[in-house]
Length: 428
Image (cartoon, rainbow, N blue to C red):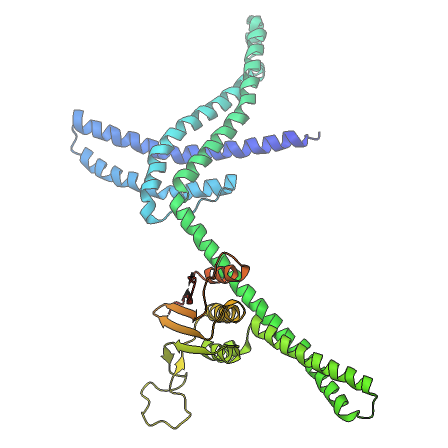
């Protein structure tokens, strides 16, 4: 006989709920029995003093303590194995919550569990009353011929009670899951702290992935498209130098193509530097910012003050008369994501000054590391009036700074000067 799928799922669910409740009854009944034992011992010391009672009481109280703490792990197994609910392992400082569940809430839940299991047993017994009757000797059935009607009523009542068991069991299981999560689960403050930690890790991973993707694009452009454009420009330059007997129109086409190729190479160089400059990885932030300042269309005063380290492999007690050209110290390197954000902040700021700062004649960039904070300040002597909320460029800078838990501030009163201050965390 084939069991309908809906009935089969209901039976499986009922079996799971009954197993969960039976296991919970066992775990909840032990603290209740210990409670009763301790109460009886305390009453015995008051009304019927016995010399051995204090000794037994001194043994029972630690046992009650061990039960309040040691039953948490079996409860976690019950929730996980029978209902698929994962309760976090509580820390020792949350022992009060474990005691509250095992010693106070558990004895209350066991009453509901006993009532439900008693209802199930009574329903099974009442539903099979006619079977029990046929198990007695036939002489009793002959002498009590009117047993059929009461037995039929009992069977009907048993079937109705049996039909009520699955929803009651499901409701009790949901109640226990709700109580277990509220008491043994993670508190709201811990859950928020864990979510903040997870979001911080995922954001750091996203930032690193985006930076790695930019590096890959920069490498592909540098090794692929840029090399092809350089080869094209060389070939056009050779054609321009060697093919001197071509008509003027052809010479003009070659000249124009040569200029376009060189312009394309220059634009691609700027694009590659904008994605992720290779000098930032090879020589560090100081060298990369020096290149930005040299290429800026207006004078830039750059000051980089970073702690220094000895090069790897050199002893710490170096003599003072070292040969010229031997590096005695090197700037400390920070996390690649922090260096990239600092570089792009300065690059975008200098670009904005050149394009939008009215009457700006110079700019000043100061990079300082103060403990675990990298402070970048960009200022210009323009007429000011920049609005951080008015355009997408400054908003993008602020978002990029916040991606590494940095702070972005900008002051640009009408009449100038404009000052942008960025602080980036860089743990030692």
